[in-house]
Image (cartoon, rainbow, N blue to C red; front, side, top):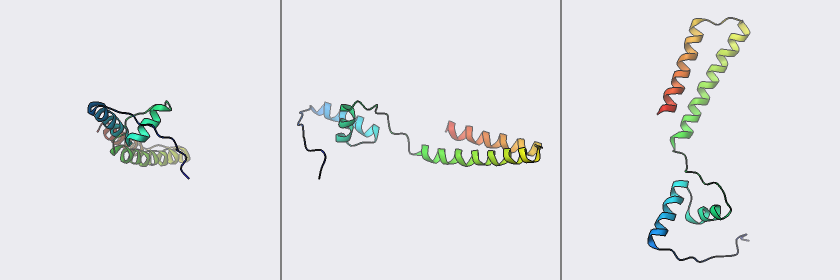
Length: 100
């Protein structure tokens, strides 16, 4: 059974409909869910670019590498200059990935 049993017909100009459609697309939604969210007062933000999820995976992997180095340094109570160089390299990769 459908939970939405009520309907509302509104008339829009071509310009208004085009604007509504454009805003819904920016949010990554179809027009009906977009309007429902507006009515409910939801803060609608633009859909993040597709490359954001890839970037988050890369940052997570780099963060895991940094954690492994930190754990090894804490266990050995010794940090080599190679370990520090590796962390700096990984941080540089994060910076470059975020700037893209």
